[in-house]
Length: 248
Image 1 (cartoon, one colour):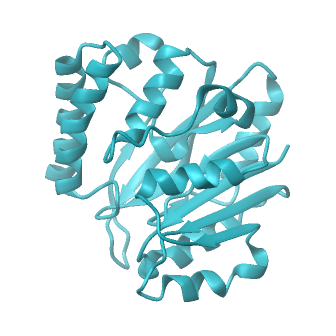
Image 2 (cartoon, rainbow, N blue to C red; image 1 turned 60 degrees about the vertical axis):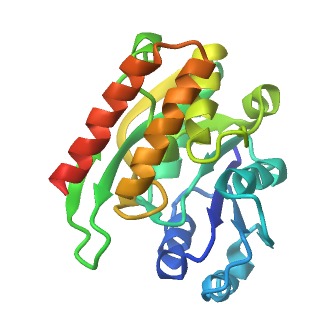
């Protein structure tokens, strides 16, 4: 089974190297690694170039934002399974992809997999801020506002080809719409791995306080878009997000 991993970035010189090393150090043998850079100006491209001989596909050009870049990567991906590695994040250990592949291989009907993640401080010590435990999947949890941690989600390419790319009408939280579409609307078969998959740095694209508030606002619109009880869902997500920053 070939697994495609996509990293999108823009001006992430400080963290992109660790993200790349994290992918390249996986002990799984069949990984297609794709990097989509938004024409960075801070030296990010130089870091990527230093690993170019170990990257399957690399594009650097202007884009319309993170989700447009992800869609470019999805269109290029040839693996049986596709996942993301954000430019501020790392895999929790070297066996993360092996565990994902093994779970897919246990049951051919599984269409998607997710696991757990940890948030750490954006400094040299990388102190634990909190963890995010996914728990066993249920549609009831999704209806109540729960979604798996986006960077831990790996989906079969055939499922993505069938149900579509990220919706660029949503600029900040298109990942929420993407997951709701797959889990709630199309009810794909998901499997939970009770292991940490990713380590996410506070202050990155998806963990800053300002971004969290913007995401909550767009989440409200997305839940309404899918006909869910948006107020309840957003309140739950807001409580989780604010707790994260209070702890930090």
